[in-house]
Length: 360
Image (cartoon, rainbow, N blue to C red; front, top):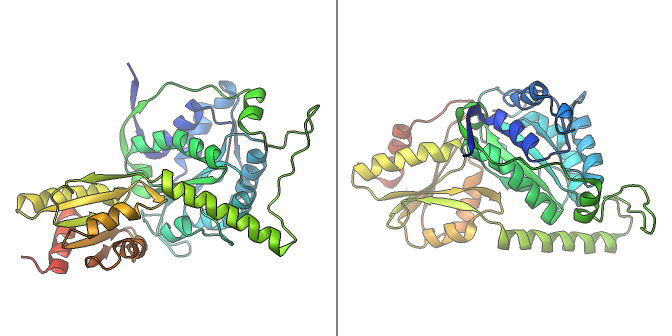
């Protein structure tokens, strides 16, 4: 029987890293994600699995340590919150440009600037649109439960190594701080040096006999070479869009109105949907689980048969831009959001929904 433990979402990230054979975690504390590092320090995995856990002197150092570890084919990760992720953006771009796998956890807080330590979903642009410089994407996973926080670490590394690409787990502060029952799956051992070479033949590991030295870089001094490389990245991103989209639907089969929401907002929208259903209004919900790749085809399909869609976000409106692009004018797309750490209630969402749709 699988072990089940009550824990915070942040704690689930840390426990999952240990149990999934992560080689190294490099981070810097910032609210509301500090429990990730605190839990790792408490568990002392260097004594049990050999995992390296290091508090760097800054977020800049953290992401560049991840860059170095990923270059060696190791399973390495970091975690931070919104302004900390901003500091990491240059390093993330370098990692994407060098086509290296890693997992980055962003537990979002309000901004811009130092903002507030309260929950937010306003890092959507930073995560999904790139954040750093250049034509690149992180694969972005959006957990809505503590169980997701646990499961997405393993899934994130699978995607990171499959596509040689950084993966971001984009959680809001509520998901990081809430406590829920988490089912722990069987632990995976850390990979041996031989297994790393087999899984990552591109890694730089010195110069083993009979093997050419691998050079890891994101630098190109020739315009044509850089253009060819960027087109190679585009082909990879198109393959990700084709194969890795994930979403969930709630009561959409006969829905006449559909909410679009991720993370904690999806959970609140599910309750709002139930309230509307009790009033005889056929509402439904689609929750993007991958924000990149975005479930644009499914949203387009729904938009073609419903009266309206409404994007619900803890922001001034970021994901709504992608919802409107996917809907492509097939139906009206509304938006409602809160900021600064204020959280909407299901009843508040129902009220705003009715205003948008001119319903009593």
